[in-house]
Length: 194
Image (tube, rainbow, N blue to C red; front, side):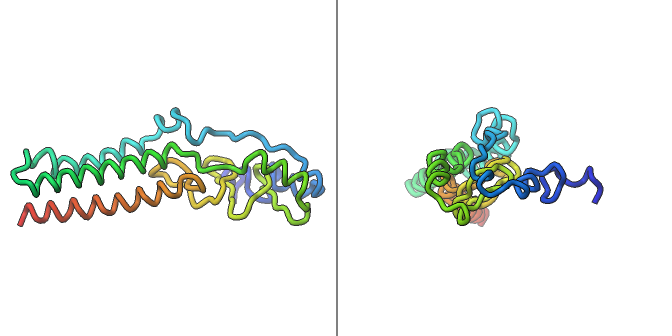
């Protein structure tokens, strides 16, 4: 591929930290200090610049208006129960969504890094060749946020954050509550039309 097409951090690239790390002796790699993260994964600025929060809240509003606003006041006790239940599901959905967005997925702690450098066996320790940090099991480098993430799953553009160790629970809850809210909305709209 042409040089402009390949990212600078591709393995084997002349400017790649990975190729530089392969030339370093193992002990020197372990003593190298990692650069600070190049982005703020949970910063308010990043969230305000992302259009995905507006998209998700708009999708929630698209199900809210037909079920709550356009139906008018509830006519029976059962309608009140449905309304309260639907608001509870929406509150849980939005709460888990914003917890996923604003919770840092996690990086290897500095204390763990220092203990491993002092006490660890250099032949058994793995090191991230991009961030130059020691890698705990199941941690991976996220190329979008440009940092090593604990127990990384993936970068999700819907939450504009990497799903990792500390926010995976909120992400799974967001998916479950989204499915419940969609199914409930579909059933209620179908029953209104029948």
